[in-house]
Image 1: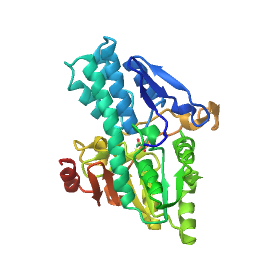
Image 2: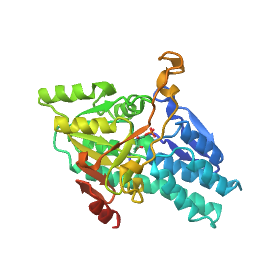
Image 3: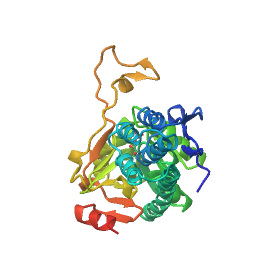
Length: 336
Ligand SMILES: CSC[C@@H](O)[C@@H](O)C(=O)COP(=O)(O)O
């Protein structure tokens, strides 16, 4: 692993979370002592990114046990924090399965969920990087790095590993309105490792792709993460991913989705049944607490969208590469 920040730090009796709302300008930490503290941190975006949300929730559940709290209540508040990332429910279910265990065993399980995620990221990164050719131009969206996971990252893990393999010419990072995870977090992570990144405002993606193509330096791969992958390979990810998938088709770019097996939800046949989180309108109508839209303006703020499987070139998880995702291939790979 590299010198990446620790977004989630277990401190024996409490959980320390890097407050991602304040990045890149301040590295401020928030201490959580029970499940409610962790649920608040997830809902308020202190910790975000599907795998990181799952890991934090597992620690939140363990904290409640450690301090003799009500585990049913812990499950409930954590499960209600954010609806789309299935990793949250996957991690909580793993904890509940150990309900009659000691608090030490619950803490150990949370730590296992954390370390398994880091290992999965390393494996996926190698698989994903193997798909890239020399001198690749890639485009990513939101933040899928060390901050969004146990460490290393999913899509950003592939980008990190491809850079180490000498395969990358340039990374383009979409800013990702309204929380600006791309601008604030992805550019920060990449610049710390001197990986060449150009920040692109969301509305400029089509133009940048056309321009790169005209210059003979077209985007080879769009590489993104996932919050929930349905049985047929439809992928819910940060709002704007679907637009990029459509653009990729028009501009001859391939689309790679990188996510651990904990992001798959085989109980959902296709993406239509994935619950899309709607966040407050003020996140769109205000910037840093100042109004940018007329007072009383209505705003839609879906946090995620669903990209149909047919637009995805490959899904990469720690169990392998799924080219042209379909229900059959996904079921077969995940059962290994
Ligand atoms: C490895 S993170 C994968 C996804 O969780 C990521 O792309 C994303 O959409 C994060 O959304 P966020 O709202 O910041 O939690």
